[in-house]
Image 1 (cartoon, rainbow, N blue to C red):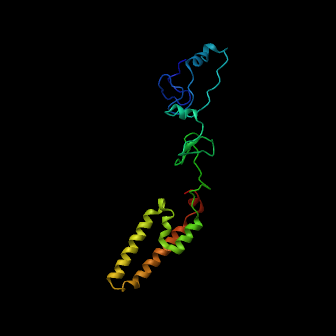
Image 2 (cartoon, rainbow, N blue to C red):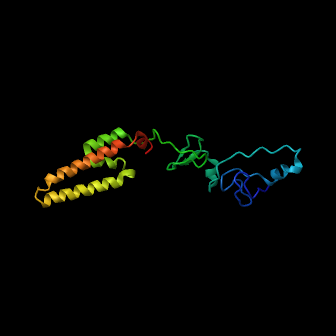
Image 3 (cartoon, rainbow, N blue to C red):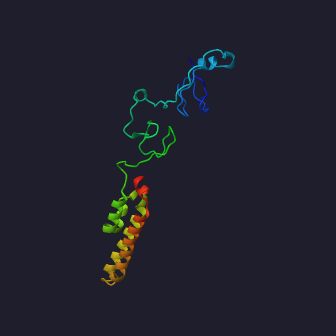
Length: 184
């Protein structure tokens, strides 16, 4: 049996012989079932509606395996395997919540790092706060160089610079919500 060239679900044009739609992954109806469901065949029993399936992968071994790959996780809503880095499930369209994931960050930990290690706390959330870390490190290095070049006289001003960096790190960490850290 030959398959229809257009998907009944999304209208995507597919190559002849395709079993699944290349656009949405829907199982394509065969030409025989399309003819059987034509208006002239109103008395014929309709073919069952095709069930949505995942689009087949390139290798035959991968299409037979219902398990996820190493770089995939299961969607909490529909249970379909999706890429670990995905923010939205490509199957159901729901945003992936990462609460309780092993990579989730803690606001308490970040705040304690800010209190005890100042700007080094931004290494904990480097993906989002990397620029702040490097700005603070640049200011600290320039501050140390000025202390050395002025034989310690700059230390009077430098203490306030370091104090400002410390307050900035604490205020920045405390101002972010718990959800920001949990979804990180």
